[in-house]
Amino acid sequence: DSPDRNTMKGGSIMKAKAAIFWEVGKRLDIQEVDVEKPHAGEVLVKLAAAGICHSDHHVMTGHLFGPSPAILGHEGAGIVAEVGPGVTAVKPGDHIIIMWRLSCGICEYCSDGRPALCPAGSQIRSTGKLLDGTTRFKYKGQEIKHFAGASTFSEYTVIPEGSALKIPQDFSLEIAALLGCGVITGVGAAINCAKVKPGSTSVVFGAGGIGLNIIQGAAIAGAAKIIAVDLNAKKLDYAKTFGATHFVDASKKDAVEAVKALTNGGGVDYAFEAVGSPETIRQAFDCLAKRGMCVAVGVAPMAKEVAVPIMALVFEEKTLTGSLYGSAKIRQDTYMLMEMYKAGKLKLDELLTRKYPFAQINEAYDNLIKGEVA
Image 1 (spheres, rainbow, N blue to C red):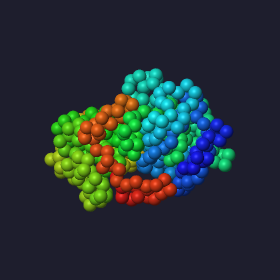
Image 2: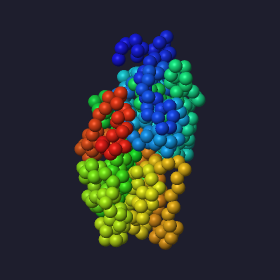
Image 3: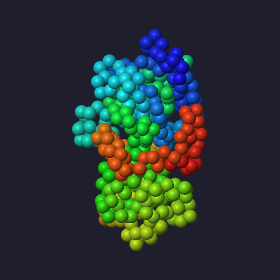
Image 4: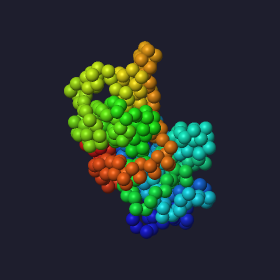
């Protein structure tokens, strides 16, 4: 980076390369944007690494609403470059993980240990603007919106102070980026939402980034049988690395019948859906034993609905629920996951199957959709 590009112009504006999402159906467009100095309570971050995730792709395809034009990306880590007035949690030079779901810390959801449900995060997510109702990005004078209060597909981003999680400087920022979404979402779905019990049985539909972490979450919790279901044989190979004990190639056999056969006809205690499809949510539900729980984690198209038999809900006491951001106490749980990684009890290096320079972000998404990367 040249010094003049990344210096505040007149103390208020700087230049940065960013991948702009212009409209549904278009590929990301890397351009040089103006980034405004952080306002009160905000933090300017120089990104070191950003993870690619299906959630951003769902916005690109229109399956998930996202304000536009915007800078997408919600999984990332970097270094604090500057702080706005009143910021005390971090200082320039600190290494941080960006938490993509802002929480206020005082509402009923935050007070109950469910910060991902906080209305403050919902406001930023739906408007594409920071808490004061404005944005920090512009392209040739045009306002560019934020995504999930994170916008990690940019060399520099501005986030609320509450979205910055300080981490030790000796912790890899590339590995830290993974903790921003995929790991905590998957592991948390198994441990926090389903509360998987030792000796139990689980099935996970979809062995992508989220699914692999659900698998290792179930393994950490002590599940005796963990069945991975996917259409892609390579993804099933990944699943073995993260703790799956049995595998179903859904391109070759009926997934529900195969899972029932692996459980002597009784079904599983826990079923997880990490694909984002009403059809696979129903399949996961149909794999349940009596009193089993099905957790939907994948993001399905906005207008879709899922139908399940009422008799199974009532007479078999089955449960269908969702899990957002791993149903986690995000700050505490992220630190816990870091300690588990350092202790060799959580696999993170194995998730990082390929690295791309920023200029190849569209190629990275192409390979994600093809199932060529974890």
